[in-house]
Amino acid sequence: MMEQNQTPLLEAVTDFIATKPAYFRIPGHRLGRGISPRWTDSVGTKLFAYDVTETPLTDDLHSPEGAIDQAQKLLAVLYGADQSFFLVNGSTCGNEAMILSAALEGEKILVARNAHKSAMMGLILSGAVPVYVMPEVLPEWGIQGELTAADVQSAFEQNPDCKALFLVSPSYYGVCSDLVGIAEVCHAYNALLLVDEAHGGHLYFHDGLPAGALASGADLCVQSMHKVTGALTQSSVLHCKEHGVRSEVFDRIAQNLHLVQSTSPSYLLMTSLDCARYELAMHGSEMMEKALSLASYARERIQKIAGFRCMEGERLDRTRLVLSACELGLTGYMLEKLLYEKYAVNMELADDKNVLAIVTYANEREDLDRLVAACAELRRASQHGAMDMALQKNQEYPPVPKPPQQILTPRKAYFSNTKKVRWQEAAGQVSGQVLAPYPPGIPAIYPGEQISQEVWEYIECFRRDGRHIHGAGKDGRLDFVKVVESSFSDI
Image 1 (cartoon, rainbow, N blue to C red):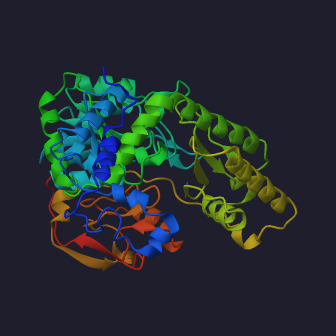
Image 2: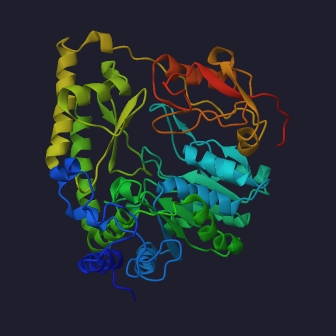
Image 3: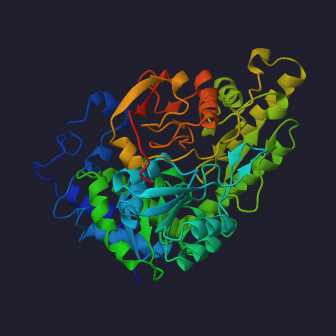
């Protein structure tokens, strides 16, 4: 039995630093001595010594035999996986590796339409043919909700040759799907369940949270440990758990991670994963209890402020606070701007209706008090006419559009000859690029899809209002879009 109170990678790097080596390896800053004083004068020098590379003590991510191998095995035991991998290119590379491994060129794969754009990158790399499944839309919140087992069953009945299903659970907003039911459907069709669990690495440590993907029957899942569990930004993990379905796929995972991960992995990121795993193993329940308690404290108080409301739901990660002040005439974008500029309360994201606060164990009561007080003050300002009326333009955005017709696979379109056309002339053309309002980074159009009028009008709302769109030009403007010069259906 492996003891979770170990931090093998942290200890290995610490031991290496203690040898005080004459250092002639990469990186060139020589255990921190060469970092700009402009930086070290602000933050000190000790941490930079941990930015090392492969040495006899520190192991090799791409062929682990020592400290990294031990750290990954500890991670697998903690999460109940058969095998776990450190990711230093974020969950993006994990999602790419899952799709690359599960569906080869020309093979079909079901993809939830609210998938992060990294799924599109995996489709381009693999050449797989996506078949999209539309999650339900929560009209009162204007966001996509869960994917149901019935939706998945229907999709497989129409496409029984799909090799896997790729979905997001929990979503950015904390909405979870019925993974137990979905896994049963997938396995009945000899298909894998791939879960982008980037926002759910903490779900395994408290009964008050929805069950995690691995505990619900997923075959492969990816978690962004930096999002809520204390690792450094860009630090993620990939877990594998076999259920007797398509076992050959699991042999491809390590090979495909070599394809999508850096050959110079950051030891700062990997050490942060080792330490985050340790904290979760030792204190995970208490950490999640604190986060849930803080979120509940704020939710109860905000619900009592007239004009504000918080999302509730059975399968909802309750450490996430989805707030709306539409009754005060404020879009989510306006609310986010007011909270930050007037009260220095910084939210994770905003959409046309809502703002999102992610509450973690590292927050304090003071943080939530400031959020609640700011909401109450905004309510009072609206009552007394003190709010800037120029802000109160409750722009109605159209609902999330249905997937448009797929003419070419994402890979075929991506590698086709394209031309630029004016955005105003783009409707009806086959897109040669992705367009994804960000956040949350969900593509409204994939390469190879015909830009329908419905999708054009949806994106036009974001373009007209100056919202951030991944796929727009260098200046952030969507004046032109790449379309395929000539196309024929290869679906």
